[in-house]
Length: 68
Image (tube, rainbow, N blue to C red; front, top):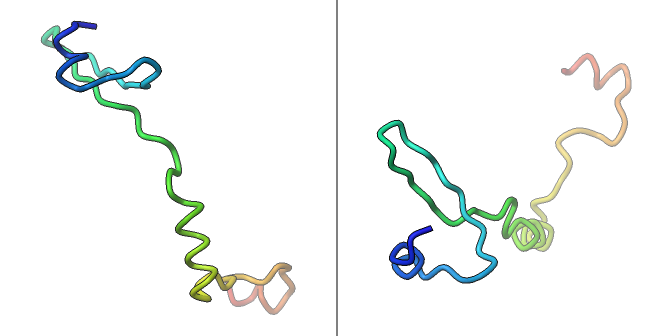
């Protein structure tokens, strides 16, 4: 990776990046996003706000099956 790119993007050792190679011989790179980052905080807030109600019951019976 070119030193200029490392400096421009302030990359540190251990930073995970994604590289897309283009047809014209150039490439694009970006810092790899962390999967599900922040979900734990968001779901905790939903629970505190009472927004974590089940859409479906824990078990399905004939009546529930007919509603689907």
